[in-house]
Length: 129
Image 1: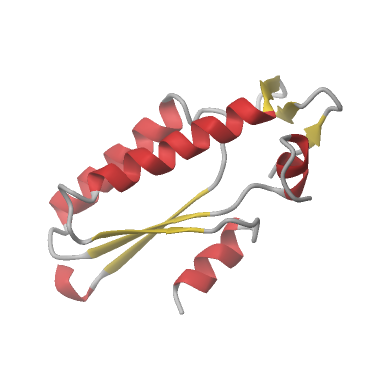
Image 2 (image 1 turned 60 degrees about the vertical axis):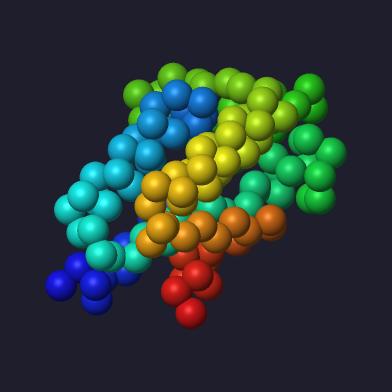
């Protein structure tokens, strides 16, 4: 059965990319590889939201980017999260690199990295074609 299964995992920049988000993604990949060892896993990384890219000097999820480059987002508990936009993108790049490094141990793991923001649903749909 696992040979006929392709697992798609969609990801985008998150405030916890330097900690729990990256760890959870890696754990998910490892768990799925044990559960469905012959399945193909495709991890899709969406590009940064235009507001986030603009705040870091790039081309024109993120709720608010202040003029000083601070990204804010209101969590479910209504706490405001803040992080520098450049730092957020660096953590996202590190999460992508960590997943790419896993390919040495999991040959059926594939990554698709979009440079531009598509919205995670569209990025996922595009990768399934």
